[in-house]
Length: 351
Ligand code: 13P
Ligand code: SF4
Image 1 (cartoon, rainbow, N blue to C red):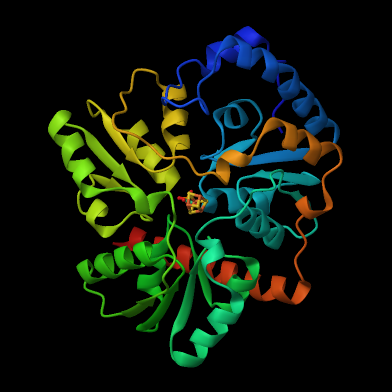
Image 2: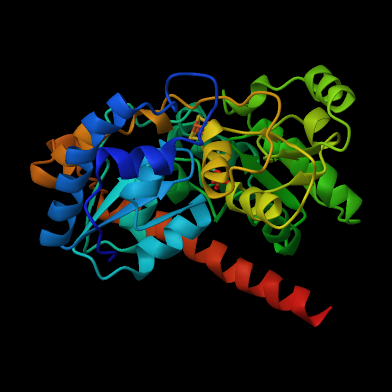
């Protein structure tokens, strides 16, 4: 766990002042920093006293990522950190399905999700009853669920995937009949990518979407390109295929971050939640970002007051509990993901 020098209004303002996304959510004034600094210090002190760790998805507010999180990343990396931690308590600043995954991987830990608004339009788009019905309709298919699903839905499927490994894992499943859920846009991207790789898989998809990523319009990408010569268009696989085909780079949120960190385009257009742009602005104020980004109301619902409550006296519904039978079956899907991930990586390294 990280030890922290207490934050002052000035040190906080200096750290966060480069974040400029246009809206008030991520705009930091001295007054805002003055109100936040004592709470941040209180949280860091309590965190150490209680042997707690704070894991944060890159989409949550910058003050959480920069001043409180022991680790920030994409859902795959966060699940690995949750599995490996020795802390007694995991405060999971993200959405509920990610906190559930942490509990599945490290069941002896107390896992707490601070915010009440912790859904996800993808995870909320399908129930385990619907999956069971689909399994009756397509009995020969391997059911692959995106990690953006509830533990109960994971338990009803065979293999879990994340945006960082979805193409490679589905390619390596030894069955040509696949049912992928719940993201229809990611599903179309999987179909296109696997066709490009010469795979003969027959992939059926569910009808869910991420309400943040489905909004992007190819006309906007073309307009941004015409206004900003050399712009690098960077997108997430939850975007529509028309966006993917116009992108210079497509990957998970952490892969997008790495891409921007390791390249030197005159400007970047990030087609994802604003959290990624703010992380990059904070790391390197000289990088130029153009166009707009979009906020996820669920991720941005994580706030300092709720994190404090989660550490002091969490609301009972904030503490993640999963029925043991569901947990066992859901863990099988996640374990299958780690196994396929290892296989696909070792195949890649042999090439
Ligand atoms: P990542 O795993 O790429 O971080 O994606 C999670 C997510 O919810 C994107 O909307
Ligand atoms: Fe869910 Fe979309 Fe928010 Fe990610 S950005 S948590 S997929 S609603």
